[in-house]
Image (cartoon, rainbow, N blue to C red; front, side, top):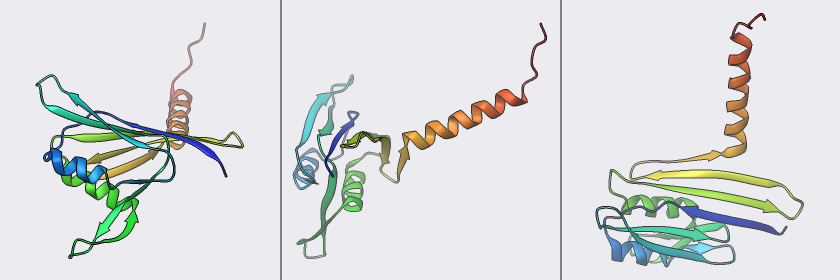
Amino acid sequence: MKYEHSLRTNYFRVNDEDAFVAFMATVVVDRGTLELNVGVDRMGRTTYGFTCDSIIVGAPDYCESGTDEDVSYDSFILGLQEFLPDDEAIIMLEFSKSEDGVWAAGHTIVTAEDSEYTDLVDSASTAAEEMVARQRMMPTANC
């Protein structure tokens, strides 16, 4: 099935710029391109962000000998975590549309210690249910 997919991140600092750039060069995408962007924060420090017009398949797993074994999305996330300072986070925003018109959107937050994916349709549905439930509990005003 054909689809359109876009991914964009915030700008973030890394603890080893050369190694990070080398790691990102190993990232495999389904089709299309992954582009690494370089910026500067308010403190004059180099920051990075990336965009992708396809789905990120992953990054190579490396065994103890340092040879390429497999490509996995988990290795991609773990690789990102290795380069993040403790006070930094990567926010990856993703949007997809299938050829039959079905949209999907989500975000993944990656820190040095953790990562978490949130489906935006699921989180919006949950938030709407909570709002409606709160409104039902509120007394109505009699005019």
